[in-house]
Amino acid sequence: MVGSIFALRPSDSFLPHALAGEGVDPAAQPVLLTRETEGNANGAAVLVLIEDAPAADLAAFDRCLYLFDGEDEASLTAARARWRELKDSDIPVSYYQQTEAGWKKMA
Image (cartoon, rainbow, N blue to C red; front, top):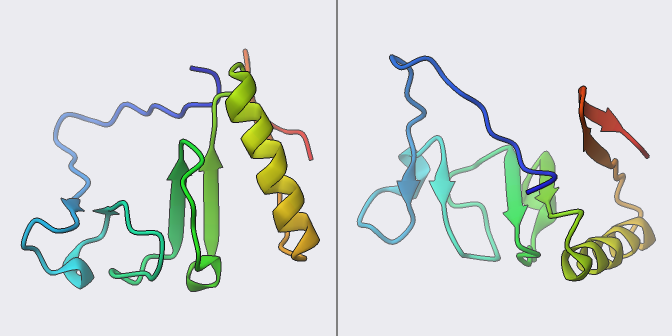
């Protein structure tokens, strides 16, 4: 999939994470995987959205990463609509595209 990020980590490293609703304290999780569209249960600085997931409270985060498949017309259309919505709300946005040499800032 174009636009995906995949990083290999050393075998002795681990990124602690939890799934919301599994009986864990969200505030104690460095990474919380959730389908919730409001709030910031673990006080995260970064929100990562995939598959055109909604986010009602972007102000609760320092940064939002919106990942989409640039080769899928429906995903591209949704991303363009989200871009316009954010720009119209005076939210600063940047666009990076994956290239053969890595990620390149396009806008």
